[in-house]
Image (tube, rainbow, N blue to C red; front, side, top):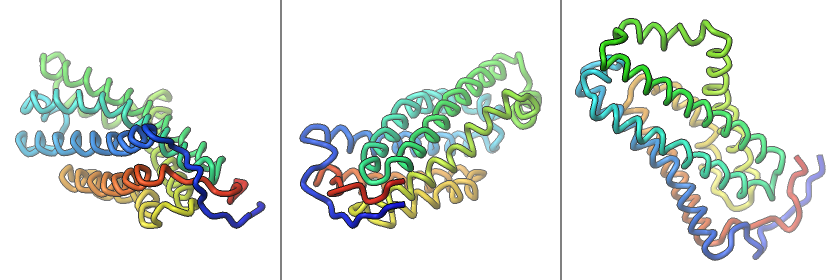
Length: 234
């Protein structure tokens, strides 16, 4: 590995209106994740349970709103990941692409999971499927099938890999605050710990949104500077 000392130059990644677009994309993805998580937490509170199938029956309006927000989250998170790729690529090309590919796989899995959950909710609400059967299918039925295992790998491990690698890539830039990089690296573990408590999960997404908002403000200000020469060859 060759290391060349470099300082940010006046040649940024984003020019003029591109800065606004990048800043918006950096914020929108985490924002919709936060709103969707908060809506799910509110639905759980109304239903008095964390069983998603039972919640769909007890709070159908909020469940529908949550599904719509989840669908919107998919393209906004893809744009978020692409923005991070463009920011990190001049500094560490391989890590940037690795993180982007991992997050793209995770977001594709998210879209699949949202579709499965939508079908489950419709079947439960129309009494075609009992809440107990729906819970069994979602908890163990999917992972008993090879395709379901593959979906699980795309959904959970790829999120962990993607966020950690992007966090390391952000650390290697000379202008992103280190605490944002640490937040990206730590977020998968924070999300895992609080995942069963929806309001705490929403708080975790609020932290991620705060970090992305600060990053977006810096992009608006300086457009994401490039190094004089690649700081790292990997």
